[in-house]
Image 1 (cartoon, rainbow, N blue to C red):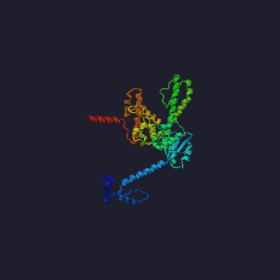
Image 2: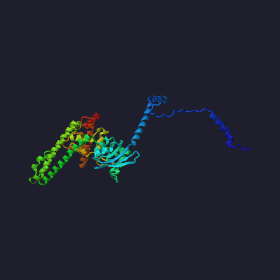
Image 3: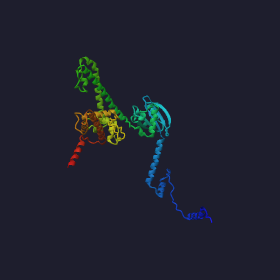
Image 4: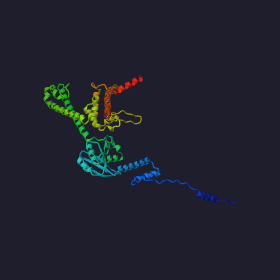
Length: 430
């Protein structure tokens, strides 16, 4: 007798197991339906849902913050982005929509009136422009029209400054696309206010007059020396009055108009100096705290405050040195670490004033301070280059110290670090 097939023999057993499984009660987990936020619901409905479903308020607040962040992100991405390339006569712009497509190309005159007509009345947008001569007033005008403005640092954006296809048509498009992707790529600059810009203009005007006077005095000294005369020992303030007697007679009439011009420049410089001192006393009294350091006067302290603007935008005082270009550059790769010169970034006028103050601190009339000892320690390591490095190092430390005194308002202690070091040594010995 042949054996039955496996499927037919097992069929009754499978049917029995299936019936038993159907008769067995199943356990079902009752899960509450997902609850969605109803913005139109009142507070009583929200409290009722919390009580029934046992929802924690912290989790609900977290979900709400996420939804608000998504709304903010959606609104930001939906804004238009405008790249603006400022020119001396005309400025070129490119308008990008939320998808990154160019929807408008145009050119406007580089005047405040034309900028107001162009940007006033349109929906708020993100405007990106490069720092330059026209960027301060353009920043203020566009912001007054209700737009967000980013002032890019052209030195830190080689994609624009070193572009092989650089033109008035490509630059605004690149600015707009970089601002649309990530504004940090543009290394934004915080423009100064109108008040600070006017005050800084007076300092720069005085600096121009000083340079012109120096050039004229050097011309007179050189001409007199070539004719066998000497003008050494004559101070700059009295040069126009005392140098005439030492000029040889054959060239005295030739140089007399130059001496007259030197006298007029000296009088104008004196007037600017009085204005600067009045600004320090009336509008910027914090400069008195900075002038506690020997070698720092009204000019240097006021310029430091005007160039930096808001001291709170620097997280640490050590960040001021690289901001003013007094820190060495970096070109490291793997184990290779090269020694580079200082970057010379930032405001050159302020950097020059700090270097002049450092020369005074290290000079014969500088008092004994921690700054002077720090510079002398570096100068002893070499010859001429070491002395130059010492001056730059003192200027960098001076900038850090000025920012520290400005933010804290503390009393300046010339030998603070030295005294602390002596106390630690005495404590260890005891």
